[in-house]
Length: 140
Image 1 (cartoon, rainbow, N blue to C red):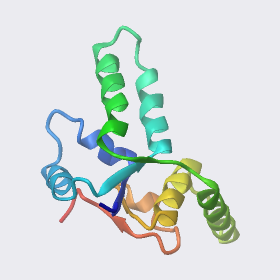
Image 2 (cartoon, one colour):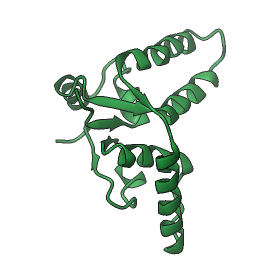
Image 3 (cartoon, rainbow, N blue to C red):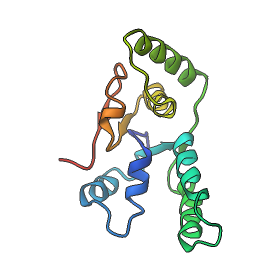
Image 4 (cartoon, rainbow, N blue to C red):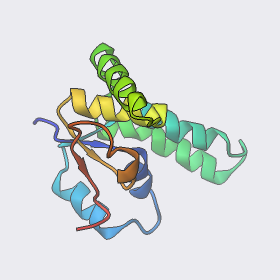
């Protein structure tokens, strides 16, 4: 089965909520087996988790949740092709006065270089990347 979507951090976080957004859950069910995420998304999740107190029940829950992500879906790396595309996009955007978050560029490049649709609720963070296809599963 081929992958179709790359899930951003806010989508992975959403499906972990006690009451997740119904549209996100519906899409996750509809596209089961066709989604992946990025290694840098795992970084963002772990960074947030590790800032919680070590004795926190929430932290232990999140550590377990994050550890299960690679079991449930592929985790794609920021490789040489992604690095090249990312550098080209950063250069292009900087020439027009735009500086985007580095990690968003990494996520965008992983989606683009793997011919995947980036799924995010933060569309504005990614809309300046050229030829990147974006979907927001929080809206119809």
